[in-house]
Length: 143
Length: 143
DNA sequence: GTGCGTGCAAACGGTTTGCATGCCC
DNA sequence: GGGCATGCAAACCGTTTGCACGCAC
Image 1 (cartoon, protein in one colour):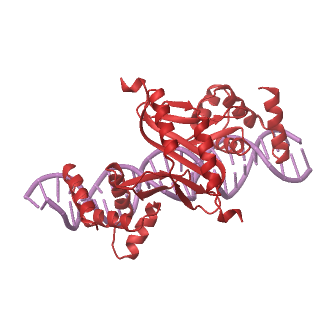
Image 2 (tube, rainbow over the protein chains, first blue to last red; image 1 turned 60 degrees about the vertical axis):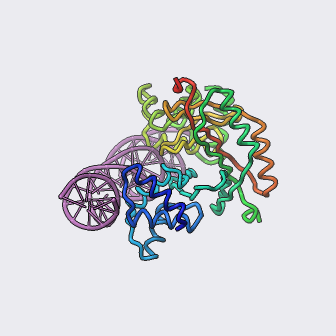
Image 3 (tube, helix red, strand yellow; image 1 turned 90 degrees about the horizontal axis):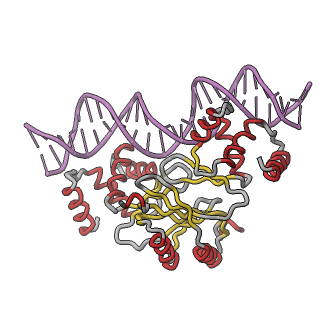
């Protein structure tokens, strides 16, 4: 794992009086390595097939910590399963979801972000985070 | 209930070979009357206190039908409980959610809608529906 | 050594479903 | 009268949690 990231993780854990266990390290390392939009069970299975035994409960507990401290972003796509993506140091983006094949495509639009900020300012609403998801049919599935 | 809406409901049911039961009528009437962002249990409880006995299962089954045919919109706010709002004939809007008090504020921005459409055209993505939710602290809760 | 972290299995909670009965068409 | 709809309770499923043991610090 990148030393800078690991140090940041260590610093966060220390500050919160949490311990750097091999399970926590394994979950973070795995999330950094495969930068998709991943369900907890996927993470659990992949760790298991790597011979790194981390229980499902610990995966859930760890991604919650990683989300809380900004290493991961949690996505809710409305199908009852949460996805996580690694986000530290990466630019913000939103998601298009194909309702046929489930593919998730990222998109960026700074104009929308600005309009969004303006709405919040106008309405005196202190924006903390947002979800902007476009559901439809991707190019491939249209054929 | 407005005759026009009822007729539309009847037409949909007929086309789908479904029956107009008093439970289905009660759920739709209730959704029209109280135009909030409502959980199934809320609908269930309110019907019950009106003396209209509709089982929880039937509420779930009915809102699913009403959503499918465009009478309701389903909102997923990431807390594991779905909300429904009446939408037939009303303008599209999106939502700001206060993370302190849970209040849901509606907002409209046609510029964002246009940009959104443009992104989809550019990426050859056939947009079906979208979610745009702003999470933050409302004016009241900032004090 | 202390006390947080883990694994396990059970609990949770919103939602869905199988089945016998009810009622719209 | 036929067959979809309902109510009930059980099942479902992703996620959370209580508890005894383990391990980082």
